[in-house]
Image 1 (spheres, rainbow, N blue to C red):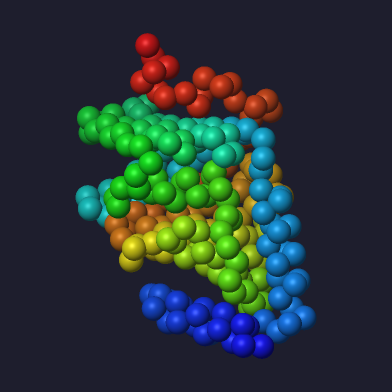
Image 2 (cartoon, one colour; image 1 turned 60 degrees about the vertical axis):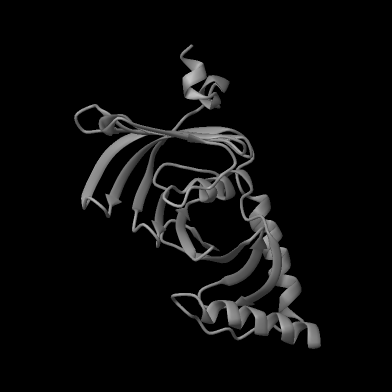
Length: 240
């Protein structure tokens, strides 16, 4: 009982410091094992094989106030690499992002910007979040959980980050929402899918509270075959 009270108190303290505090009713001894099993099931259903898709993206850039609409492609090798290329309506590449656990590269060709890094997490780019979401999805030590409307709510500790994870229904099937808080920065993603693996019509919304960047992504087409390994190489090395 003392251990459960401490976990509940810690959860309440963390959430009271968050921008959007929520009630914390706590889970009883009978519900907690169910919550742990549900989290394990949710982790197991995340995609494990490489996949690629054609996507439609809308980006709201707060500094300039620009709204960028475009289409592009994303290739994901869970645990290893993610590559995303966005092309604007005029055919110009506006974003080319490549991220692995050890290195990353983000290029904005229309602005002549190319940035690279290693295992660092720059404060103005969602590198750390992309690594967590695509490489170690839902990873972290569970230290509190409860049932809320409309579904399960877990609190995880992942390194120095605290992750709020919610599961519930959406109009396509299942929604998964995660807020990752690290060093005063909160990044949130809401994902609505028809099934555990990606499918056309799935949508994702991402927000960075620090920069104000917001991205809406809709899967338009899904490739029938896994992407070639070439897609996951460093873009600069691949052109040599």
